[in-house]
Image (cartoon, rainbow, N blue to C red; front, side, top):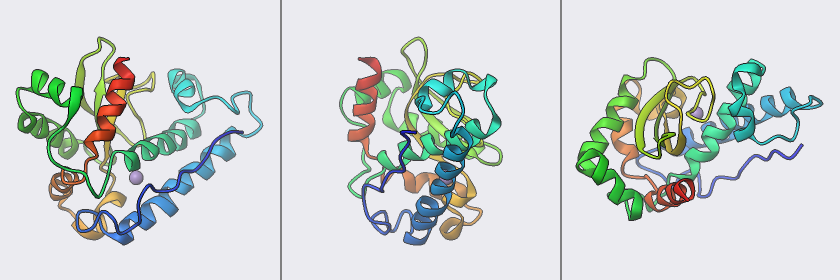
Length: 203
Ligand code: MN3
């Protein structure tokens, strides 16, 4: 077993006022930790123990539901914390910033499309900016803890960034106002990190 549960790269209150301290603490130390615990319990002593999450996602359709739900939850939150920052916000930077403008016309147009994907995801799930299998940026959403790396995904690709739109991610501060939470997200996106992810994907 070589799975690990990450520390947050900033303090629980570091993303205030956009995401409140209590939400961050519960989200990381309870929700994310539970995905980690249940995933590691499910995979322990199976033939898959030790495989990377990315490798498991490729054959998700053939694997137990616990791998999908909790392995997905583990991976998705690992990525989510990394692409947030108290020093985030502003427009996308670097090669990713250029590509967003080329594909969507402007940063604002991208923001609208991503926000719509996040707002219109019915129930719990995630919104994604990914690189699809043709090497092109794409925006989509997925249900529950699914992600674009899974073979069962409607829109497959490699995630550059993701936004958690489960109610546990925003309810204490925003209640029913998911669009306000989505808008706040854009004030704390770590575009430097997202650009690093993008550069790694395109090679
Ligand atoms: Mn969550």
